[in-house]
Length: 72
Image 1 (cartoon, rainbow, N blue to C red):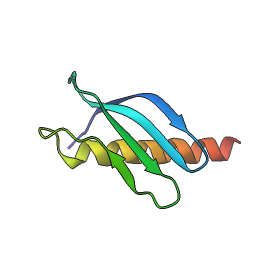
Image 2 (cartoon, rainbow, N blue to C red; image 1 turned 90 degrees about the horizontal axis):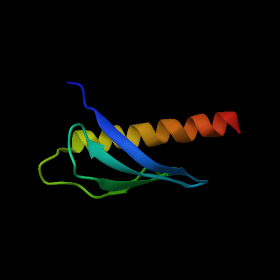
Image 3 (cartoon, rainbow, N blue to C red; image 1 turned 45 degrees about the vertical axis):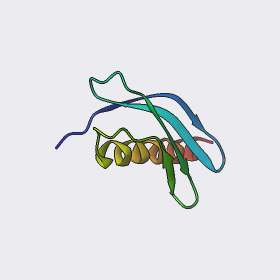
């Protein structure tokens, strides 16, 4: 299963990464924040979209944070 989503307004700081996210082909936007130390997330979740979208958004934010750390 391929889970596609869009991220915008991405911010990666020392201990937190956050972004707005939208499932593929949806007009709904939620917000996700991920604590980079504990990897816990706080997110808006739409009742029609499963945890797969949140997990994918979390994974992408953690990946971007690691890349930023490597390039620093």
